[in-house]
Image 1: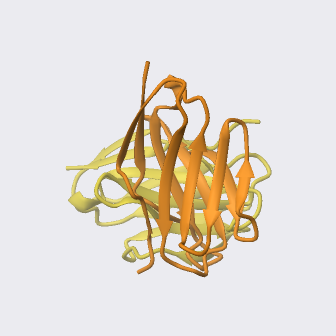
Image 2 (image 1 turned 90 degrees about the vertical axis):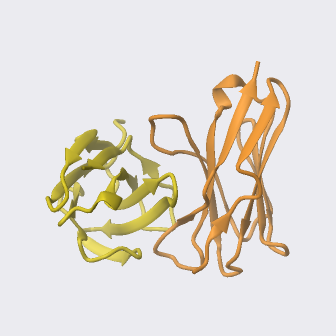
Length: 112
Length: 113
């Protein structure tokens, strides 16, 4: 079936650097995308979302970019901090309004 | 506002038993979804309930079932447990039905021996 995938399973950055986490999706009918952060022992925490009628959305220190032509989604974190260390998931509706399909996740490690 | 709560947080069962997990959504949220999270398969959608009605179900066997009460609280039941059912079960709530921003609870860690 359709699924959301990630280019890299792990990402290691230095504190203060910018981080970019990538995600590829396969269903061109997907119209809603979300990024979640999951810290060890906790449930996923909503970061930011974007609908298919937009190509960029900014939050606090985070930016999501959507490229529908190549079906690619990215999460940019500015001035990465140790507290940003976590697993990051992208999810999309996969063309269905009734469920979200999650990627496998990218482990972000921030080195002090 | 209190977040999504799930009980119990940890559970150990043996094969063949059944289990019921509980989820209380954020106050005012009427949509509750359930997910199974395992290291191998990641986060997989189980089902969503909105106003006591199941809107959609993921690719799981009929041993997995759920329900939602009039106060939006939800329960998930797994019957005839198998070793492969060991996972973190996450509940998420949203004010609107999917697609919508979902807020997750801490999960219930189920271990099947």
